[in-house]
Image (cartoon, rainbow over all chains, first blue to last red; front, side):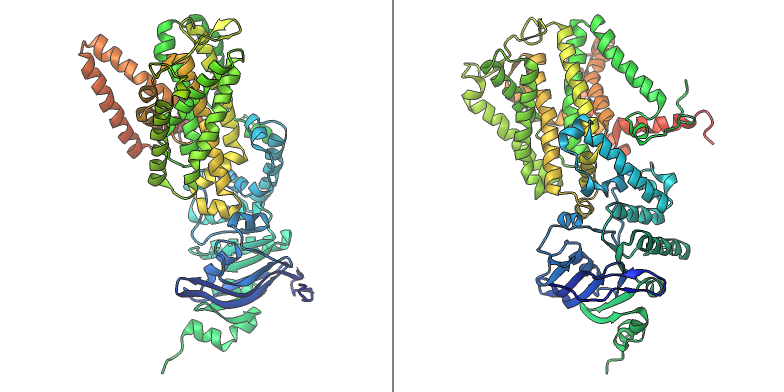
Length: 272
Length: 358
């Protein structure tokens, strides 16, 4: 199947390409509960796509479907023009999808550097034996990938903590390290689950800047869930709005803002 | 020489990645190695070899093995004794079947066989975690001991049901059997310890080690990042069992010489090695050595102090040992779950700033 969408250039000069991921008629049930009801939307190459909605709308479930954590009962996931069969999360990761979590999911017992290096697992190919003897490919690879990881460390300005155990870091930095770990995989599609939850204004500004920079410098496509409307409206190219597992709006921030159904979902409507 | 990293600049990632980035540590490591290889063999005698050094080295290998599984990959195992028995019986069968092949190859092969058995018993870890996995490995422990007791093929149909290590030579020196001297026993164990520790260190600092630790710290996130949990857990079981198998082979062939499986490789052994890991420090190679040294030395020290110095009856001393070990386990679990290795790490951090901590 060929997706036909025209590439275009945004107002701030970023090139938005063809379709990267297309979700069609996704339905996800947990027993009798329908967490996601027949939702379709697409994510285009190079764009920042936000998924918003009130609590319990099914946003995180949607992200879990994309990252392969849940397999939907109905619907299709198309990635890079091909239909994706049901997959384990680690297989999805190998296809080039990385994500962060709403509640930080770092490896607490490891240093920042090791955490980020773990993000490059999918790229490292040295066999067990080579690693056990620390010869040839194993050592070469370790050094090559370390160089790449150092670029990400520079990019996210966490040089001073690279050898610190993650368990000693404050919350805001942990969020940043988690972003670094996801970036280390050089993903085509980066999923951010509430990257700014629990942050103060300054930390939010930092994180917003990093997200824009990642998108701009690496050309990474980003899909994010966020509750701060100001952030969402400023960052994203297009927004999907969910409520009770349904999609109630889809479009540019301006379009979504004026959508009556969206306003009702957020502000509530009088039931008579 | 002070314990400092200031001024010790690293200009390549290779230099930064080395095991001992601080000069003082590096020097200390080479001195330890030199003493162990060059000086100890000259002064070693029967008592030191049999009571302290040989068991310490063998338990260090076993503790490294279990530490990889439990400390690095987070999978609790109570099957260590059983896996050591696999190594012992494997080396026995190999020694008697191929008397002309070098012992080194037999011991490595015994490790390999144990690795396969370990991976097999690791399969339940894909479905169950924590206590439930511990119980599954406990089943492995009892099953393996029962198997070696019940199937006469394993002990070559000997009347006593025991296995006895025949005499084997390496470089003209007897390393097994009654005529093996303390120096030869010590050196063969030391060689395997050096080899295993190096292997373990290399594995734990690279991709394999990171995927193990990722599974340990947060298995869901590990999977999302691209770690194949099946592969990570089974390799941990296999590598861990490889080391434990080598330890079992040495324990039987070099140290004891004759083994009755329930006695030498019973559940007590599993707990002893687990305690070594906990007291020494989970997730640390150094901790494996520290824990093994501690639990080998403790009974000796208690005996010297209690029985020889204070003249207490030996039963009291041996019971006191149980009390002390039990108390220490509780103390470490509550106060310092990362064991002696963490205490050492904290000391080093303090040392870096000493004597001007502000």
